[in-house]
Length: 173
Image (cartoon, rainbow, N blue to C red):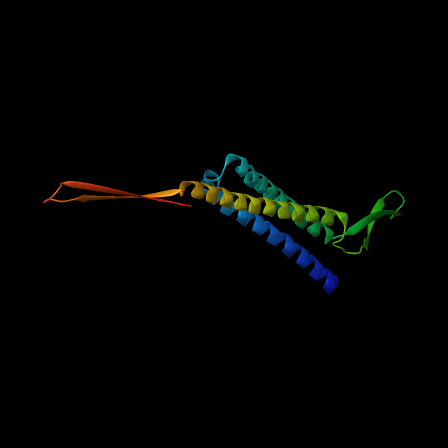
C-alpha cells in the first residue's frame, strides 16, 4: 500500500472516530444535565433535544458502519478459482489472487460517511436551537417576574412601638 493511500485511510478513520467521540460526549453531557435542561424548558422546545439525541445516535451508528467499510476496503483481494488436473481422477483447486486498487472513495465508504456527517451537523444544529430557545424562554420568565421589586423591612423595638413594618415597592418603567 502506498503511503498516501495509508494516510487517506488513517485520516478517514480518525475523522470518523472524532465524530463518534463528539456525538457520544454531547449525548453524555446533555443527558447528565437533562433534569436541569428539560425541566427548565417548555415541553414544545424539549422535542428538539430528543431529536438531536436520536440524530447523534444515528451518527454514531453510521460512524461504526464507516469504520467497518474502511476495514473491508483494506483487503480487496478478489479470488478466482481454476481447476487443474493433478492426476487422472483427482482435481486440485488453485486460487489465483489479483490485487485491486485500494480506495476510500468507494460507495460503501462514502455513503455511511456522508450520512454520519450530515446527521451530526443536523443534530448539532438542533442542540444549539434548543439552547437558544431555552435561553430566550428563561429571559422572558425573568422579565415578567421583574416588573416590580418589593423590599420589606421588619424592625422590632423594645422601648417604643413593639413592631414597625415598612414596605417599599419599585416599579420598572
